[in-house]
Amino acid sequence: MYLTGEKKQELFAKHGKSAQDTGSAEGQIALFTLRINHLTEHLKQNKKDHSTRRALIKLVGKRRSLLDYLIKKDIERYRAIIKELNLRK
Image: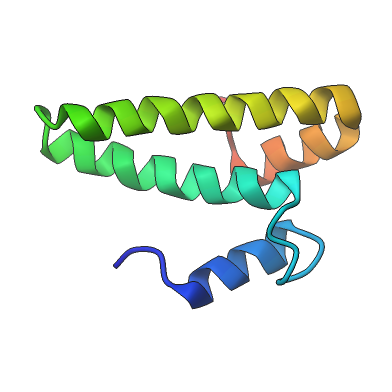
């Protein structure tokens, strides 16, 4: 499995306030980004998997709404998470 409990805790510890802070916007964005990257690789190999494509589109929308929330709430946190995750080219 690509996403173990230890990997999640490490992800939240790095991007959230602590390992137990799973609800912060930064932690959720980092988790969604990891899942989006995994699904993107899956779809490169399985082009006709439309249910996975739909799930990917929904995840991208959720991440976008969290990023929009961060822009309104605190622009510095938004800029920091964009830089850490390399979301902009």
